[in-house]
Image 1: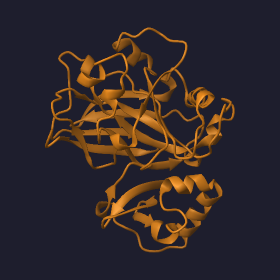
Image 2 (image 1 turned 90 degrees about the horizontal axis):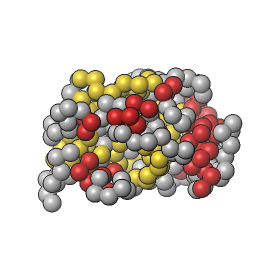
Image 3 (image 1 turned 90 degrees about the vertical axis):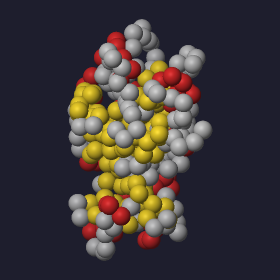
Length: 287
């Protein structure tokens, strides 16, 4: 299944994405489950109910009629992984490490599919980072690698767009990763059952139609299961939490000359079996 969060006629909602449109679930389940995060919290059994409801039929919303929101609007945690592809580690000239490089994003730093990524006032160095996001469906602490993928609700595309001039103010990357509406998350959640646990997923980033990043998950330094195990060793993972698993080589700041995203540019992150996450770059209007 593909599950999306969106705004329709000014009201936030969620639904099941199909070829002929979006089967709205908010009008049917919203009293008990106001958002997609609450659906995941309810457990796996309700996912079967969602599919049954859609199969019974009913009107669909046109995809063009909604404003897509981040897949999970209010995640408790957004844990991002840095330097998790060898090509990216080499281009940034970082040493190999025994443990994953991690940082956090805030919910307000996110935006949805087909919305604007905002280049903040005073910055000229907004960079692209295509990634794959995991969404946690079943919480846990000290999860073993062998059982880790059982805790995944599904997968989405992510653009961890980074404000490089702020990112490197210090050794901590937090400022450059948390400007409002810089992290794009979507277009929807593809549930785990749609993608085999051992599937090799292809990740491509395009800027104005030109391919700038390409890799597959076989080149991950630390795979999805190992990341879940490591992160859950020090923090309890909860339904709706997001793990952003790292970007491959090809980032703009390491090119000669550097290639940064400009207002009016269109950036796309595509992951096979998931879809295409698309955003236009927009300059912040005020200070």
